[in-house]
Image: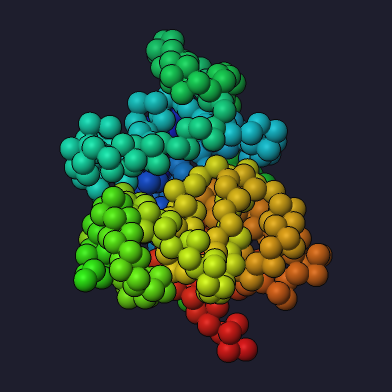
Length: 243
Length: 215
């Protein structure tokens, strides 16, 4: 079968690996990580546009290389082609290969910040805030824009979260070219004075998504005329009739 | 004579030093604290909210105006306490268990303070029991819950259930917010209101306080 994969660039390496191994023909559309920073309500229209690029004469399904992602998928409509989305809160669950594993890890580790190859090479923290405000949020930029006193205050406020986090966990999938990603993650943890941990990622959800193995326990299949909505339960997302 | 417009503009422009200086000068000239709040601070923060809504202001500007407003409010606190003036309401605010995001929550806290509320900020990663306990101890009438992750959003429900179990649910208005939170979610977990952004949260708290005063 032929499918259209709409994915987040943060997962590009993992999805590219899955595409290479898939028995199916996969067309791709990757969207910028910046959508994540816009928040759900502003992310969804961009996803919908990409999903609508699917051609019913050509594609049997649109595969979402996304999790619920801050409700970015909430309200996403399958208009002409079936949509398939993994049941996960965010991409960390996808990288760990299971939302149960992510949940258990999340709740047993306080204040964890996650990194993967995609987050290291494509995901800067407060990129969208920076673009909105027209600054890179370096101390020098903030001082230039808001003055010495206010610039320093903003720098501290916008980075205060760093003091709440205690750990940086690097998810290694085995797709890394070399040790540079781990080194970057270790350096970031050291700089912020966070504990560093490396865990093994699991590519099975990516491979199942792109391989067409959509077990209802892990994937939601949304038929044309339905949309994805957040379900606020174990299933994370569910399908609902449009209109 | 002190120009209230000067205080208004200092807050609007995020100039904390001027905001504090003008407030002190006004107090030295016996301008009543309540007049400074109602005629300069509240309108300034309303304007800040309006500019945020139309994307003229962004998070940094909001943070700076909130800082200036707090600086102006500081010298007024002892006077307000001594005069026995009642706050618009008492708010317990925090980011729910498991979630460490605080920029949005801090903004709402600052804007509520500027709007005349007494604000008890419990910080981030706040357990449901802590919210319940604080409401019990302070007689707060509004609880504001923030979450930035869909994986932590459900803790909001646990707070509401905790308030119910403690027999406090009828005494407090529960408002929820944060990027992934929707009106539908707020309704589903039995919250009383949902604020789409920081300035909407303040308007919501005000209308709750008003209806409580009327009812």
